[in-house]
Image (tube, rainbow, N blue to C red):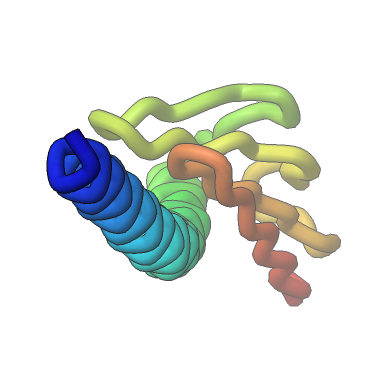
Length: 118
């Protein structure tokens, strides 16, 4: 009977060691995934920021083209380009001087571009 108890306690100890090892591995994997998610989120935000800047730049180019044609978008007008959006925040009348302010949006990012017109 004595040997039976020792072998059962060894088996119980082996199961406990396996459970602890699985828990340690699980915590290591969770930590790695969490770090990877935050860096991927940061990279995604950087891409969205660049897209928002390009959208704002495109809005300025659209305004200049429309100004050359004698008509301009009004303040508050929007231009949708797929997942990006351009908002004309401040828009002078065609042929006038002033400040043109255009906001580009992409996902969570927003970028504003202001141009002095002479």
